[in-house]
Amino acid sequence: MTPSHDDAPPFTVGFLLFPHFAMLSFSSVIEPLRIANRLSGQSLYRWELLSLDNQVVEASNGIPFTPTLDHDEWRRLDAIILVAGTGTSLIASDRLFKWLREVTRSRRLLGSTSTGSILLAKAGVLRHKRCTIHWEDQASLQEEYPDLLVTNELFEIEENILTCSGGTAGLDMMLSLIDRQQGSDLSKHIADQCIHPDIRPAHDKQRMSLEERLGIHNPALASAIHVMHSHIEDTINCEQLAGLVGISHRQLQRLFKENFGMTPAAYYLDMRLEHGDNLLRKTSLDIINIATATGFSSTSHFSKCYRKRYGLAPRERRKARH
Image (cartoon, rainbow, N blue to C red; front, side, top):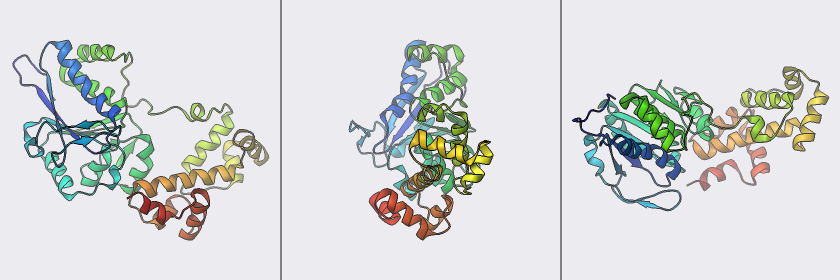
């Protein structure tokens, strides 16, 4: 990742597109390269589009993209970034995973945006490395691959591997990369062109605070929900929860009733079932392991509560995703 000079060949990035990839994620990682060329007056960067089968790939919004480079010609590239979206967890291609390991051994820059991190994890190239993914998939990725160091960062760059949480975070990741290669003046000018006055560091937050998302203003209530989130597997009862938050059990009951129209126990159960639903849809974990990960003592108890909440059995949910 050395700076480009006038006589240096362009740094060429290949974007490997997967069906139903997110357009926002893609735009965020490719547009900074185009703007870098325009502002510098040089061909600092080139880019190519690839697909696994060299066929047209449709984005999640239905817009088709035609590959510009044959998949087998990847050695012409300096970097490869996987651009994925919904359904990524269902991709099971030994050919792809073997290829990703080969790319890693070549020491080229290999990255992903959004759910592309799942594919890097499946290939085994993220083992014992810091990585990130969209906040919606963090828990399921960590649950299925406990040897990963899954963070809440906007993006992670470690050695020749980079991962991004998706959406507009790709812009910040590419600005960081351009900063390293071309210097901060150019990266700042690109940010200005994108109406992005604050280049976010990797550790900036991915989403709104809990208080903003739920529209709550009571510190004790917010603290109680945070505690619930941290005890999905090793559940605690409402008496313990109230004690940890520093209020009475009666006050805890009142806060949840006033703000959500339900008891703390019901809210907690919904939270755990939502996590279980996420694991069913996005991982290949056995249902018994999902039951354990969501604090249920048995598969039957988990299944009974899940059916009551979602109207179908866990096994039916898993079949429906195919």
